[in-house]
Image 1: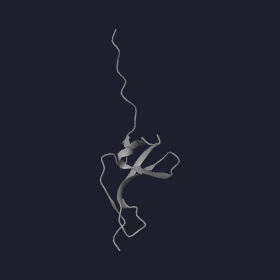
Image 2 (image 1 turned 90 degrees about the vertical axis):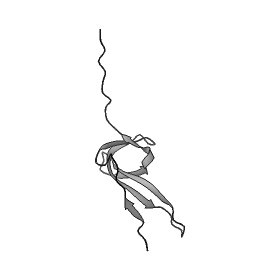
Image 3 (image 1 turned 120 degrees about the vertical axis):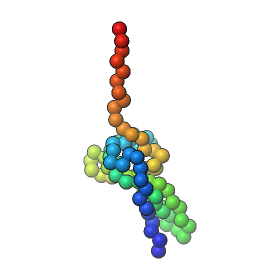
Image 4 (image 1 turned 60 degrees about the vertical axis):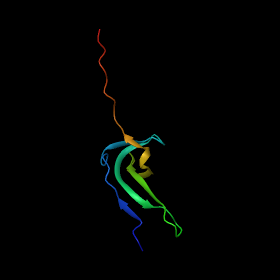
Amino acid sequence: MAERYEYVPHRLLRRRVRDVASGAEGELMAVVNENVSDTGVERWVELAYIRGASGREFSTAVANVEAAGHQPQTVVGR
């Protein structure tokens, strides 16, 4: 039987990210190309695994992941 997943490099690994679908934030722990099919026909998707503040991990589509953090404040001149 072939592997059902493989790790994929990502520029935001081990950084704070936001899942735009849910608004939840956490640390990006892994990106995995995973076979999510339970039939004989393979269906591969890239999933991001994010560890939230509670310590529990959740998954979302990689396309839903963006860097989290504070936007730099601009200085208003007089």
